[in-house]
Structures are given as structure tokens and as C-alpha cells.
Amino acid sequence: MPRWLPRAMLLALLFVGLFQLASWAFLQLTDLFVMLLVAFFLSLALEPAVDRLAARGVRRGVGTFLVFLAVGIAVVGFVAALGTLLVDQVAKIAKDLPHLVDNVILWVNRTFHQDLSLGQLQQKVLKDSGAIEGYAQQAADNVWGLSSTVIGGLFQTFTVGLFTFYFTAEGPRVRRTVCSLLPPAKQGEVLRAWEIALAKTGGYLYSRAVLALVSAAGHWVMFALIDLPYAVALAVWVGVMSQFVPTIGTYLAGALPVLVALTVQPVDGLWVLAFTVVYQQVENYVLHPRITARTMDVHAAVAFGAVIAGAALLGAVGALIAIPVAATLQGFVGTYVRRYEVAVDPRIDRGEQRRARRALRREATRRLRRMVGGDGD
Image (cartoon, rainbow, N blue to C red; front, side, top):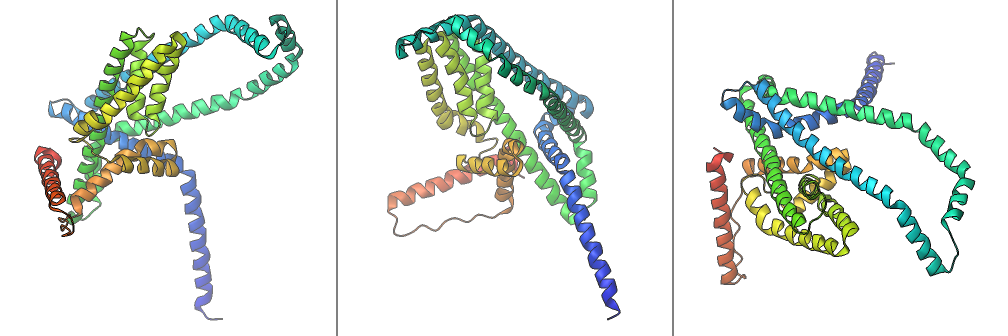
């Protein structure tokens, strides 16, 4: 046996053991890494507001607390408005339930030529009380699991909030700490990349907030005109869900007002549906390009692909942060990748050549305005 073979075998076993240990530790800490990633992007979205307060003489800790307080009040107000709407709707359904049951029984008897009555249904329910008790016992057994899930969710929310507060309040110090680990030649590039991430993520939040405000105002006017119940709560729901929930947010936002309107008067449901569709087209072709032109311009196909990729990698969390990540990567490409003018194909007619040159000039002008406005040196 060669003299180096035992040492080589020992080193191989040691490397395998270290690899297994690192894999186990990474799997155990995956949730922590995801929470740190979410906290980092939330801090990027909140730090521009804190920087503005700091520029006016407010300490960063106090400014971060004020920003968190404003965001918390907005979230609590949104949840309270929707909670009031949900409770009132459930109470209304419970109040109208006997009348609805009578209507269903009459419809069944008339359609299927039956002779059912409310007393027969009550006897059937009492006869199947054993099955109901079984369902109740099963639900009681799942209470502990539901409680632990809620407690775990609250703990994760608190952890994300704590790291977000730290990253936001200590943003400059965190950047200095990271740059101190790099050679001077690389520090400028890291700071430049960090500033791009700040601008793009903050721009995403700003553009979404403005679009949500405009959407809520427009839908509130429409709901008030047709005298729809809970017009303010429904308008806030439409504005928030359509702008901050990727891909399916628009459909979720419009479904609830339509359902509420249908319970009042079916014609109102059609009016709400028509207005939602028309407003969505106005937003897509008029409001969205103008607002995002100065904040975060991400093509719809890129945003859709980013949401799918984020959901596949990190689930719902990945879907929520996918668009800011895509905007940041797009900013990196626009900053560090050099672009060249496309040679005009001689087979293209002169009209298309003029349109292509005008498009290139508009793109160059837009990029120059962005750079002058603060997005570049």
C-alpha cells in the first residue's frame, strides 16, 4: 500500500462528511435564508423613504420607525376594512339563510317533482348527527395544528420585520461592512450595484403605490355612483390586490366587487365588470407606461416569466419579490452591458427604416433623461 493512500482516504472521508454536514445545515437554515432575502428586498423598498427623512435631519432609527409605523397603519387599515366587509357579508348570509333554504326547496320540488320540506331536512340532519359529530371531532383535532401554523407564521413575520428594520436603519453601515471585506477596486462596483437595487426596488414600490391609489379612487367613484355597499373597502381591495399581487391579482381584485354587486342587483354586477375591464385597459396602455417610465419599466412578458420562476423557486414569497429582482437585473444589464445600434437591413423599405431610427432616438432620449434625473452619473 502506498504511504499516501491512507491519508488520501481519510481526507476523502473528511470531505464527504463536511459536505453532508454543510448540506444538512443548509436545508435546516433554508427558511432563515428566505426570510433574510425577503427582509433585504423590503429594506431596499423602504430605505429611500428613510433616506429622505434622514436628509431632513431625522435620525435613521427614528425615520425607520416612522416609515414602519406608516406602513403598519396602512396594512391594519386594509385588513380592518376587509374584515368589516367579510363579517357583514357573513352576517347577512346567516340572516338570509332560512329564506334561501326555502327558495332552494321550492326550486327542487318544482324542478324534480319532489315533495321535500324543511322538517324532512331537519330530520335528515339529526339522523346524520353522528357524522356531524365525527367532522366536529376531526376539526377539533386539527385545532392544534392550525394554532401552531398561525404561531409559526407570526414568528416568521416578526423575524422578517426585525431584520427589515435592521437592514433599513443600518443601511449605510451594512454597505460599509460589506465593502470592507472587498478590495478597493471592487468596492465601487458593489456600491453601484447596491444603488441600482435601491432605485429599482424603491421605484417598484412607488409605481405600485401610485397605481393602487389611482385604481382605488377610480373604482370608488364607480361604486359610489351605482350605490354599491362598502364602496370604500371594495375600492381599496381592488387597488391593493390588482397592483401588489402578481399575475392573478387583477382577477382576484375584480371578482369580489362583482360578487357583492350580484347579491344587490345583477345589473350592477355587469356594470362593475364592464368598468373593471375598461379601466384595466386604460391602466395598461395609458397610466402604467407613464408612471413606470420614471421608476421601473419591466416588460409584461418579462414580469410574467419572473413571477413563474420565482414561484417555482421560492413559492409565494418568490412570486412577490420576482418583479423587483427582475427590475434590478434589468438595471444591471442596462448599466454594465454595452448596447450597439442595429444595422438597418437594406431589404426593409424606407418607411420602416425611418420608424426604426425614430424608435432608436426616442430610446436614447429616454435613457439620457433617466441618467440626468438621477438614475445614472
